[in-house]
Image (cartoon, rainbow, N blue to C red; front, side, top):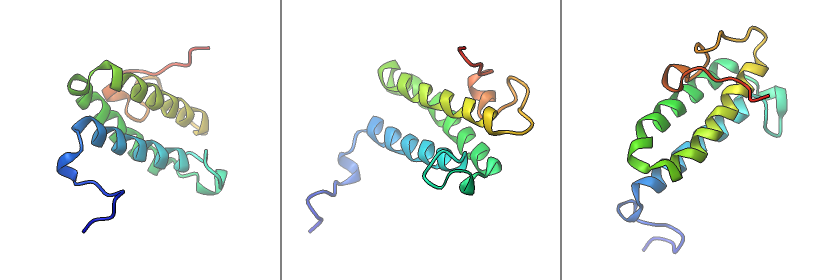
Length: 111
């Protein structure tokens, strides 16, 4: 018998699965950007680029299916990571060439 905190995957709505996966990708990207507890010891921009690009593809593909109420906050988190990548890079990509920007379009700071 499964533990009470475990749920059968068949009972989990798709929007919840997508949200959980995006949070994992965001967390992993933040670590690789040096934004977690170990800071720059974990900095790996190549790995961060891959994670952010995968995240952008997932959010872009899922957005029409999950609706703006769910996709909006995910897009905000993605944008934050894209900007953090640009700031962490010693040679920032041209606008539109950064991680995931082929899916999201160019990302600019609001400042």
